[in-house]
Structure formats: C-alpha cells, structure tokens
Image (cartoon, rainbow over all chains, first blue to last red; front, top):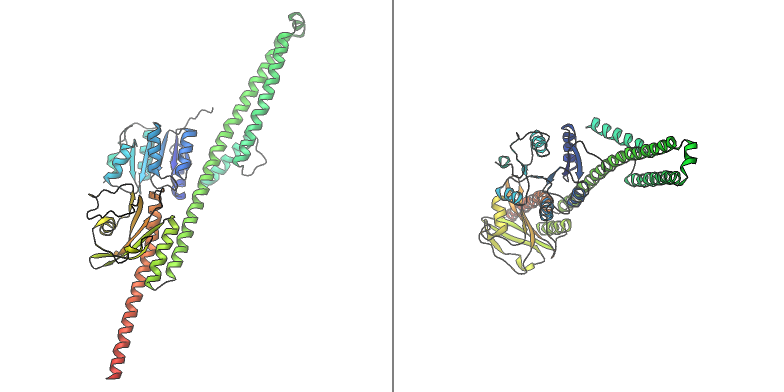
Length: 142
Length: 292
C-alpha cells in the first residue's frame, strides 16, 4: 500500500548489540533496516513485508539460520540472502551456495565490507564489492 | 548510540502524532492496530456518505439541480472525498512506519530478554558447578545442567587420560561409563583433537570421523564440545537430543559457552584431587616416620 523509497534489509540476528550496530550502520548507508531476533520472526517478516535482502545469522534461536535458508529455498522465495557465520569452512560455504545464498560473510566482519556488499545487492551501489547477484562472495573465505 | 536512540524515539513520536496517537508517550502495536481500524472505518463511512450524496444528486431531476448550482456542489463533494482519501492514506503511511518501528523495538527487547535468560541460566549452572570440588559430584552436575539447559535426554562426559578419552559419567546409557577411545577416534575424538564443537544432525559421515562406532539406539541429533582450560584439553562433553528434536547451531554455541565454565570446574576439581593426594602422601610419610 505504501511506496518505499529506501531499500529494506531484514537483519536476522539474535545478539542485541549486533542488531543495534547493524541497524545504525544500515540506516546511515541509506538502507531501511528491519529486525528479527529468531528464525520464526525472520520467516514471518520476509513473507509479510518482502524485504529487498536478508542478512541472516546462522545461529538463531528456535529455527536456526540454515533452516530459514532451507525454507526460503524450498518455497522459491527470490529474496537475496547474505549468510553471516562465525565459521569459515568450505563445507558451510558450499551449503550456503547450494541453498541459494548470494554472499557469505565470516564473523567478526568488517562493517564497511558488510555495508558495501549489502548496498550492492540491494542495488544502491554498482558491482564493485566483488559480489554479483546469484553468486557467492568466495573472497570472504580465507 | 544515544543520539540514534533519541532519533528513533523522536521518529516514533512524530509518526504517532501524524497517525492520531497523541495520547501515547510510547504507542503499542495494539494501539496502532486499533487506530488503523478506526481510521479506515471512519474513512469508509465518510466515503459511503459522499457516494450516497452523489447518487442522490444523480437521481434528482436535472432542471431542479440546475437551479441549485449542482455542478459546483458535486465538484466540492468529490473534492472533499478525494481529500479525505489522501488524508487517510497519509495517516496509513505513518501507521505503517510505526508498526515497523514498534516491531523492531519488540524484536530488540525480545533479543535482550533472551540473552539475559541465557546468561542467567549459565550463571546458575556455573554456581552449581563451582559448589562441587569432588570430581564425581561435579561431573554429574555438569552433565545434568547441560541436559537441563538444552532439553537433552542424555549424554556423557569424557576425560583425557594420557592418549585416551575415558567416559567417566553418562546419562541415559550407563553402560558407556568406563569405555575408552583413542584421541582422534569417533566424533568425541575428532572434537578432542580439533578442539572444535561439532553438531550432528542426521546421519554421520564415517569418513569425517575415522574409528566411528555406530551404536544402538541411533542418536539423530547430538552435540560434542571440547572441555578446554588454558589451552589444556580436559575432556569432551556430549549431549543427545530427544527423538524428534534437532539441535541447532544456536544450541551448539550455548553448549560451547557452558563447556568453558565446565572445563574450569573440572580443572579446579583435578587440582583439588591432586592436592588431596599430595596431602595424603605427606601424611602417610609422616606416619611412617613416626612409626620408625
């Protein structure tokens, strides 16, 4: 019903500090943040509010990030998902790729890098952050 | 951070004012929904009245309408209707922004509450563990607290003895107590060598865990975390999920945090045991001297 001028990004993260920090930084970058503290809320808000992208932490209470990604993949929801994980192993990267994630960021992440990647995915910036839609940011892995 | 918080509060108040929620210092989601219902009920009623008037004008004979300057009146009425709709749309925009902001606030509050609950549970578990210095009692407390924390049905604690891991405490499978496996063997051995927590969900890849022995009943979901104190491996803590439930990465992190405290308690109990053995040896030596 209401036109949105700013791209909207859902932050699915259980840590309140990270939620606040990401909200402030995304706001400053011209992105409207939406918050979800668990997997259920993330899925509900994705379905109800159709964000332009999702920043998805793997460790979420209830339904974890992998299950959220699986459900989105199964339902064919085209929302681009950036997976945020503390693990930098190839197995998890491959899993994220198989489930249709567009980027994989390893925690602790550089906030500027995260904003660059997110901005690029939601179309606020040209493709200069090394991420293309439909591909994984392999460069994030050591 | 404080400026951001102030900006958020100001934005909430501004949207609340626009949406007609002047009485609310901090509007609730329920109040916003109620205001939305009222807004659209009133708008719909007003638009229906306008429609009735327009239809009435259409029914009345044209010669009588011409006398009354109906064209202008109709123009004004339709204009009022359009203005009313735009006004309602403007309010709806503010209400939608409010809904999103309030949902975000609820999410943040819930995240904080969850974190506080988690910290409180871990503190309680820490207190319980630190109340014991006897190894047997401590291991039992560790295992029970871990199962309680994660709604697990059972599990085990394995301690390092030279190049082996020995099951010293078990819940749900008593026969496991006393079993030995070499470091590097099976899931627990893998965790001990890598010092990395492992989440098992579904079938286990025997190639990933050499020396793995599948046992009955088969556990669908389980977690193993290392007990490490000051870079020294004390052992491995394993917990099993009840049938039909799967552990998640979130549970794994909680168990890993719990294991840090458990490792400290085990290290302290070992020191206490060593100290007691040392004192016993000294007392024994003294007795022997007295006898001789």
